Length: 200
Image (cartoon, rainbow, N blue to C red; front, side):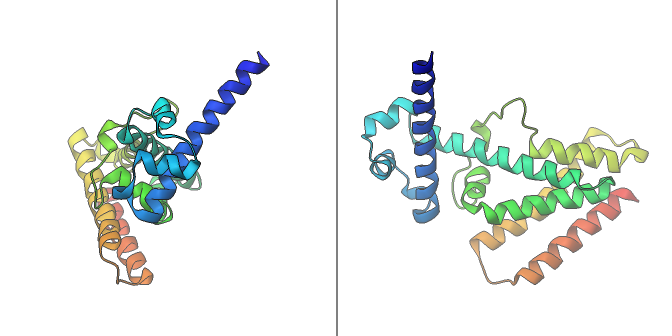
């Protein structure tokens, strides 16, 4: 049994090394530079060993995308837990989303297709991970509870939020030049304005 455990631990460690190497290449050279050969060279394995764990490069990118959504979800849940009022929860979750985008910029690019193909559609999160969209959706419903909103109305406001936040993030990733102070002011004003509108 101990021998089986060691083998399993060894496999998990190798799998983790492959993913970490891929993420390092993505951060240092960009996702377009990623290849199975580069991953193998970085961790000093042969390419066939990499293929024992992942069918191809897309499978690695999909796994990293899943990792990104898991991290983002946890950060948003933590942000929500710090507030009791739904409006404050919404603002805190979107701020956590913003912070994630620039703390884990390469994962964000991978997850949402900023300057590259998006992997999001191929990802299935584990049952214990609440999708970021579901977290936001539920709190929008709570903020609008008195209005008894339809699904379409909640959907409209979710996409309003996401369009503003993701749009501002994408602008900053693709084209730098605006100060952090201005970005924070634009983001805060936009979030406050939307929250006030749906709360009224």
